[in-house]
Length: 258
Image 1 (cartoon, rainbow, N blue to C red):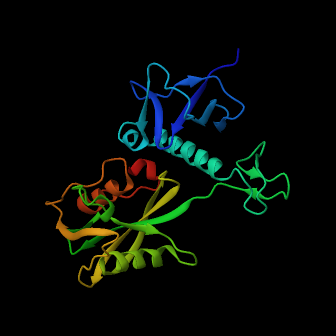
Image 2: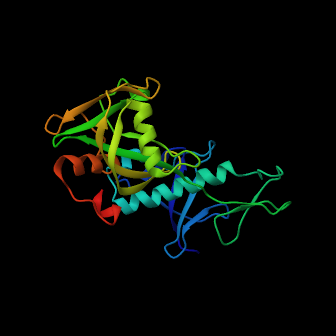
């Protein structure tokens, strides 16, 4: 009998764990995605007609960010992103034929034309903006206008754009402000659905806050000692805010910083 594999079993953004939020061990299937060969770690989807095994539960992966170590969450992030990639590339984007999984690398291969489709990530910039020595810009997403949480300005990098240009553009578009002193801080894989958050800090340069209503429902400069509700610990946004407010040092390794 083969050894059991540690399994990331997902149903969309929900992960199957036990009552202690630990992963189950299961017998491997031929259709499983191998995440870590040496440690026998696999990933698979929980199908619609499959029941939840006794003693297990489906938990939002965002919730686990606050319960797991950075390393655990990063492996879960890798697993869910690879499953999403495989689901979205069942057919060749060149000729439409059904693809097959490559035997030794993460690639979906077309048996007809030979085209290889590899996993991709979406680069997103996220910026902590300060004004003077004791103010930080925080904004509320229009998609969560009923929430009391304020976060940072963020957005996708556009084709042909540098990261710094993306920082300036997103800030000008969403809140109407110009920046100076843009500096890189850190990065974090963010599996919603397959993003890489690239963190910067910057200083306010000019302008009055003018909201982009389809993106931002509210934004303001807050005193460091009068912050509203902010993103939870474990997210790069939380670490960035703590860096600005409390002067916590940025680390060469993002894992040590979060």
